[in-house]
Image (cartoon, rainbow, N blue to C red; front, side):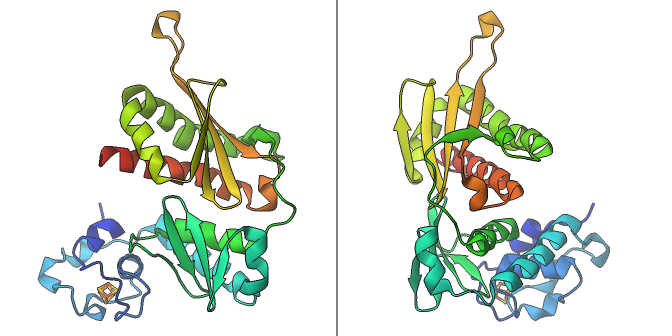
Length: 262
Ligand code: SF4
């Protein structure tokens, strides 16, 4: 099996200095695997640490994500960032958009998106962020929360949401409730009571709250733990369905990651 981009990134200094012509070390790793860059393009990569050439196989999924990212970037290239910022609930500063995203802050220009704390943004994160900008927001959120299945043409996405967010959350919360509760503090959240064993809203993006309900279940009664993610009724005015699912998927991954590090 070929190497993954993250395995290559481990061999790099992760400074995102840009000397290789790519905006980040991850971007360089993806370009290297896709055969678009040579190892020599990074002056800090020791070639002897790289495995044999035949192990460096293209990663088609990430390669595709990288291509989609370039297409989305082109779609925002001519947008007036300053005028669209208020509608998205974000700040505009000297040609950049400052976007609160998950547990961090992202500086986004038409060319690049970076977390201000230096944490790597996966190309899929960047696609989500550029999509959010591209949609430009519309009417204010409704404040009414509904399941993904409420939106037209969502059947296949509902299954993805279930598998990559709701089931993962339910499993993790049933095994690791307290650390996950503590890790929630890292996000922009609001807890409320009464509707489930745990209920909260988390703002993945300023106009993209997710409402999460969790029930412990009862093994003696044959009831498994359950989690349900809800979206604002007008969420599709801010993002496409695939991006909505990715918001929940990415929040889940990051939440679990933070809880493990506690
Ligand atoms: S030159 Fe090397 S260290 Fe700098 S961004 Fe590219 S891969 Fe990372």
